[in-house]
Image (tube, each protein chain N blue to C red):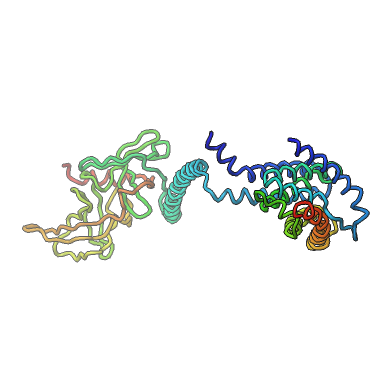
Length: 277
Length: 161
């Protein structure tokens, strides 16, 4: 305090000058006529310029508060961007699915994957569509790019699908280029196997594999994948052919169930003539 | 304390002279600022601090007697007292007051004072910025300096002989 008094005394001329000028300005501003109004505008301009000059010196507390607000805003915007990105991807996916639905000859029911169970060799997905949507077991599940699997169980509003990457899954298939038939199965790994293709058949890497007409569950011409590897089995008449599925099961979110009923007459006849296991 | 009563008394006298006599000696509405000469005298004799305070008091007295812009003369004459106080020196007042140095100080202080006063005084009127500076501010300063020759000679005779 004493130090402050000493400083004020050391600069007493400047202090008193400032003080008296401020008093004069206050007195001037208490007048009210056109000339004083003009002078008042100069005073306001001067005070504004001084405040502008002072504002160059950063206010630490204001900066801290501003920083907090900006950080919060950044988090909110980041969240908003993520949600928009999500919506964009979903939009793209749904557009693709819509295209498929429009060109598909089958009646399709769209469903969303609400659960995935990738346990050992029996992988399944849970869909948010069930009996109320017309879904029954053995109906094929597809995506906009190709075959996913088939329905194996249903409840009122949910259904469980067995995907291609399941050791119990089988599907009649063919190589699109030359109609060579085989059966799709899976015994682990990223690829599925195309079984029953003899060594004499013409199969090339890159060949497209689709479902065949022989299946009682899957309509024909649904894309399954591409031949990714061909190898010879020692002491066997058949080749080992790996098929890379076109569906990316890890990122799969939206699917369709083809609500085509199984041709019961055909199934009954086949059961009648075929020997029992 | 007594000298401050003396200053107050003479301030009233000079204020009245300024108010009633100045119109008689004005040339084209330009009058000498007798109060300013008085403030410079006080500041040179007593120093900057006293000059500032008496500048404000005398200016306020002038404002209150005129009643037009209360605060304007108080502000400009405070600044005048501050500037004049720079030329104050211990035991140098008689030398300064009795020489042309006094007139030059009056001219300098009056230029600053009158320019500020008339620029602000003429705002909001038809008188332009430069006209306010040269026709009123500068002219008043020279007239005031010319009039200050009279007290300079008086102080010269009083202090230097």
